Length: 251
Image (cartoon, rainbow, N blue to C red; front, top):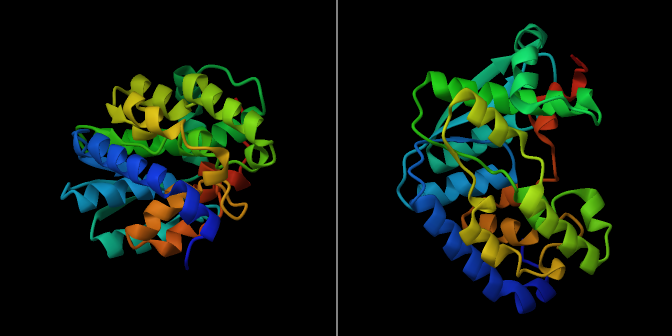
């Protein structure tokens, strides 16, 4: 599927700069493991593969729900020939780790049920990576916040959208980074690195909106890496990807 003409005409140079900077950060990351779920993490895994890096990938599957990431993760692992490990969790698992999870991220004042069923996905993946002896884990943190992946961001006018992106880049909520620190797992989040942000925050809203799906520049990079099927995905939060969106367990 070809890109919109307006995107190609106005955003190509910025996409090239971002692509080059992401490659640099991923290549120097020292990561041997990664989460594999949506657009953001898939792009990083694909870049790592193109650079000849060997990664062990993790995707979380809630056995009592509908894990929307599963089919995509399996497709990507086969297409790129990367190792994929499944982390199966159920309601009993969530109840067992909930207290420790809250200790890691702090009390959640806004919609704790929603936030915790999202955050437990990262907890499960990072804990499994730690048990497997991963040296450093590659994360897609910041992809939605910096590149306008949320529906409410796309409804903002351009100036407000760019202000929101800058605010999230400086002080967004990234519970996976708190969980990693709590568990003692070293992680790298390229989208939030200073090197990438210097380029990313220069990309105007018009290069991110696409046809209304957001993150257009990341989707274009996925296409050049041969992952059209992922580039066309709609935004799915972590709980939807793992299937925990069917659960409401609050502390």
